[in-house]
Amino acid sequence: MILGALDQFQDGLRFLFESRDSVAGGVQVGGSELLPLLGEHMKVTLYGTVLATLLAVPLAIFLAHTGRGAFAASSVANVGRAVPSIAVVLFFSAYLGFGVTNLVFGLTLLAIPPIFTNTFVGIRQVDTDVVDAARGQGLSGLQIVTKVELPLSLPLIFGGIRTSFVNVVATATLGPLVGVVTLGDPILSPGVYGAAGQLGTAILIAVIAVAGELVFAGIQRAATPKGIRRSDPGRARRLGRRAQLRASSV
Amino acid sequence: MSFLLAQIELRDRTGGTDSCVLENGFCPTWIRENLSEYVEPTQRHLELVVSSVALGFAIAFLLALLAHRRRFLVGPITGATGVLYTIPSLALFALLLPITGFGFLPALLALSGYNLLVIFRNVMAGLDNVPAEAKDAALGMGLTENQVLRRVELPLAIPEIVAGLRIATTTTVGLAALAFIAGAGGLGGQILTDPNFKSNIVVAGGLCVVMAILLDLLLVVAERVASPWKRATA
Image (cartoon, rainbow over all chains, first blue to last red):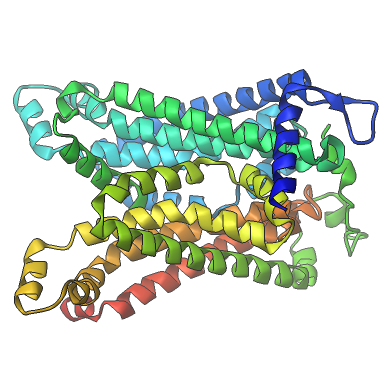
């Protein structure tokens, strides 16, 4: 049984590198035929993540800076987690019709809560002493936001974008349900692509998600201002964990 | 156009003469008449959520106790569960199929896997936040390490542990909607019986949200019951 599973995984990997006939024949699938699917997948993922960032970050900064909306933020984050991605994606396509725009719309909505919550928590957790010191030095409200609060919360903001990116890569696999042929097609239609197609594409998507996570982790580290990059790694880890915990429990 | 849509056998919408249903609107009448269709998928969904949160909690809790005593394990466990957490659910279900075959098992394994990181991290944080004075006092009164763990550390870690369970539960309700790919049914499978009918999407998606809110409330109540000393001060 183990050997059988290994064979299947091997065949799945082969599907990624060599094209073959579809199950019913007549159409080539796999290998280079996957490139358009990959392109479509990355396109909707990038649109969704970028749009969500542009919408969520300014709003969260405004609300956190003025100290309003903490309750709304926590409710959105909590309920948002439970709404099934498949329902969101299908809901908008049922109302607005099939196509890339409406898929991106759904993906954007799903990507907003993690970015919003992390930005909100990031701004709120900036030490009030630091903000007071900045105000005492004569910085205006806008300057406090751009020169103090924003840089100090960049690590958490990028943490939110990282979470959303991975979520959106995952959710974009539902694209074929609304007429956008992403990498989800071989997973959702093993009857056409075969079991090897389903498995191989699943491996590919897992690799993309993990790679994205690593890239964003690198960006997150690079974006951390030197002043809060602790020389003592133990302390940094504890602080990071506490901030993360607060972000996830909001 | 996707290949999939052609394959799904669309169920005839009962009450097909109703103009609202024909025009694919949001139809309260249709929903009232067809609500019984959703009972079985909802039960199935609930089974998936409860069993996978329970299994995920059991494993993560044991891992946390282990790492609590042997600190060098914290990094590797966080890393491994983190990678698991990153793999998209639809892909993970598909990856498990060659090993487990179709059905409840791959869904259970994948969904429990997603809970490990959150619960592990929160149990560890709860144990780490216990004041050293409390532990010292307990040791001074002659309690053994194990007694300190059971009578002092774990009770004081309850808020963080429950916070982790709440996140894990609401997340799993959402993720379980994709378990159809593993052949495990649930409300996601119900959505796909008629994936473009607005009423169907709203009812099935709404049931997920209601389920998440109810389970969340249940956990909040459980936390209060499990920590009576908090109620006394409140």
